[in-house]
Length: 304
Image (tube, rainbow, N blue to C red; front, side):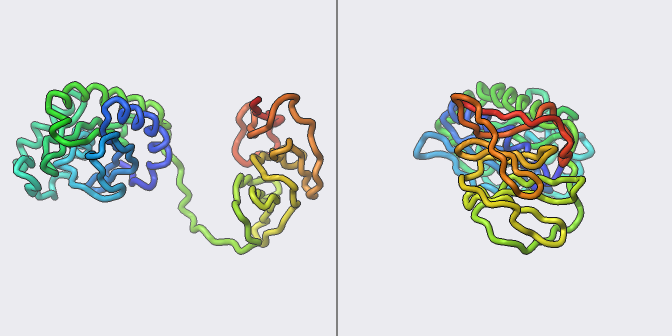
C-alpha cells in the first residue's frame, strides 16, 4: 500500500460523503484509516451524535492486528503482503479479548475476507467495539478502510453483524471513485521563491509556452506572475477574485462584479456578464492538458 501522505488527497475526498452517511445511519463515529507499516492511522473522522462516543485521535498509530480497520485491510491484502506485515509483529494483549494466537488471527482474517467486513470485539480497548470494511480501488489495490466505532453496550455483536454489509457497500463505493492510475509525484526538490506578499494566493496557472507561472491574490486583488527568476504584479484589480483560467489571449478572471480578460501586458478588458446571473467559477471545455494555453474557449459557469 502507498504511504498515507501519498494516498490521502483523493481517498479523503472520495470517503467524506460515505463517512457522513455512516454516522447518520448509526449515530456512531465513522472513521477513514490507512495502513502505515504495521500500524493503521485514522485520516478522517465524522463524530457520532452521542455525548459518550468513540473519539480516537487522527494520525495516531494503532496496532494492525487488534483493530477493525487493521484486520479489514489485512484480510484484503495478498497472503505475501499480509505475511510480510505480520511476521515481525508481537501480538501483545491490549485487553483480555485481544487475539494473541497467530493461527487464530489468520483464521479470523480468512473469515473477514469471506464476509467482507471485520469486527473488533473490545480487542484494543475494553468497552469499545468496531466494524470495518476494506477500501479497494479499481486496480485491486487496498487503499484503506472505513469503520464505525462506539460503546459496546450500543454496538452489540448482533448490531455489528447487521451493520457489516452497510460498511462493505460504503467501502466499495469509495473504491469505485478512486482513480485507477496512481498519482505521479514530483521527486524534484521544492524551493521557496521570494516575492511580494499576498493575503491569499490562489489559482496557480502555468503557461508552458511563456514558461511563466500566473497566480491571483484573491483578497488584495491582483494577478502575479513568476518567470523562474523573479516575481512581479501583472495588474491590480478592484474586486475580489473568484476564479482565474488561462486563455489564448490572456487570463480570464472572475470577480464579484463580473469577469474580465487580462491580456499578457496586464491590461484589463471587461467582458459582458451573463444576463441575470452572477459568475462564480471558470472552467475549460473540453478538458485540455494542464498548462496548455492554446486550449479551446473558456466556458463560464454561473448561477442565478
